[in-house]
Every structure is written in structure tokens, then in C-alpha cells.
Length: 344
Image (tube, rainbow, N blue to C red; front, side, top):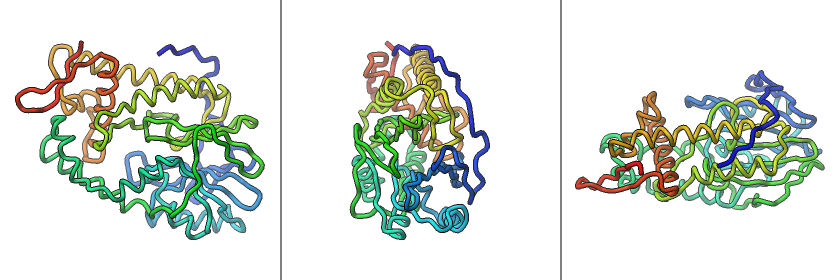
């Protein structure tokens, strides 16, 4: 992929995040709130867009009682006297969609969400996660580790408060009007199937969700229900598209960490990061065939628990599938029926 040299460096106009229960105004009529998460990535950003009658929330935080309490403090504090009038759920992950059911019911407000993300959320809530075992076993994961990883999925049900029976679709090329502002809707794959992003060209605001993050790459994973998927290819294609259609000097409002400017530079860094990971895999598989499980400690040497292992394993498979599609790896089975990979 050809990456043009950016002209604008990365900078951080709002380096201090808001304390829980408070907000920071990052642009006129745009508030930034932060909610805690019980994971290594210990927070998620929620943005509030003024629409004249109240606020439209971009994402909700995770579906836990502590997050509900944090919302109560926000509503009784900086949002006192106002109400929520709508929710934009960027994607199905529980830290972004967890309180959609609770908030839409409480305020009787519409949900705006990409169709694929809405349906994926429903599917995960009704799937039998134990059926995923063959996917992990054939990639070399032990029976014990597979048991730990496959039972994690049931935790999703404890982290979301459900979805309303109806939603308003966000789709690539669509427009969302909030309080007189025009937001062009973009979607991108990789981190999730059809993650929504919002671009206000007139005010140079870009709500990037988890597609472009400040400090880390979003997790790019192959899911067991679609083992031949190429989410990394989709993600890199999305980064290239964003550099083509979004101005370089926008204020990026990401799903985690702090807002920043320098979108093109950051997209280039993310693309380079994944190119480096692919190079490591190619070198590792040049002399010794490797399973995806073999590659996890090579790419993620600090993985220590099932939560991290699940993400690391699925991200390794994403890189392997991407490299196979590009003809850089050959996949084969040996007598044990486990999938291994060799560099061409």
C-alpha cells in the first residue's frame, strides 16, 4: 500500500481527559465524557452533540451498574435540565453499546446504528459459544485454553442491556443531522463489521470511534463464525479511504484516549504497525511452520489472561488470513490436523 507523507503532525489540543461525572467541551456544542471499563483498556469515551432540545450521545459505555451510576451523576451535574434525544451506537462492542437498552427505554429516544452492527449484537446474544471450539483447536490452542476462551463469550450478555426493537440505520454515504449540523456517515470494517464514523466537514470534526485511536491499534480479529474472513485487509482499506475523503486537519474524536489532530499521520502509523507485524510473522514462519497459537507469544509476549488471549489469538489469525490472501503465507495441515503456516 502506497502511503503518502503527511504534512500535519499529530497534536493533542485537549490533553487532559474529563473526570468521571464531568465533561470537557471540545468544540461548540460538543461535550466529551469518559466512563470507566473493567479491562486493561480502562475507559471509553462518550460524546454528546447538542441538538437544540438536548443531547445526542455517541456511544454509551458498558452495561454495568457503575456506568449507570456515572450517567446519573452526569445527568444530575453538567447535563442538568437537559435530556438525551438520541443515541448513535458506532459498533456492537459492549463498551460502546452496553447501555443502549437502558438509555433508549429511559428517555424513549431513537437508536442510530449500522445494520450489520445491530444484527451482530443480536446474533452474539443468541449464539451457542461452545460451538466455536473447533476453530480454536484447529489453530493449535490447547483444550484447556480453548475452554477458557470459548466461555468468555457468555460475558457479553452481562455487559449489554439489550437493544430496542427498532433502530434507524446508519450507512456509508448517508447523512445525520443533529442540531443543524450535517454529519456525513462513513463506515469501516476491521475492528467490527461496519463501524460507524461521523464527519462534520464544515466544522472539521471527525468522530472516529475505534477505527482510528490515539495511542493503540484497535483489535483486528477473525471471529470463529467466519474463519476465512480478512478483517485486516478491510481495516487497511478503510484507513486508506479515510485519508482520501477526510481533511488532514480535522479534530479527531476517538473512542478511547484523547482527541487529536493529524489524522493522516496517525493512519499512516497504524498501517505501518500492521506491516511490521506481518513482517514478524513472515520471518517466524520462514524456517519453521507455525500455528496461530505458536505466533501469539511472538506477537504478544505479555498476554497473561483469557481476556487478552482471546483478542491476541484472533488478531494473529487476522494477520495470517491477510497474508494468505496476498500470497505471503501457505496454510497446510499435518497428521494432527492442526493448521500451520509457512512463508513463501
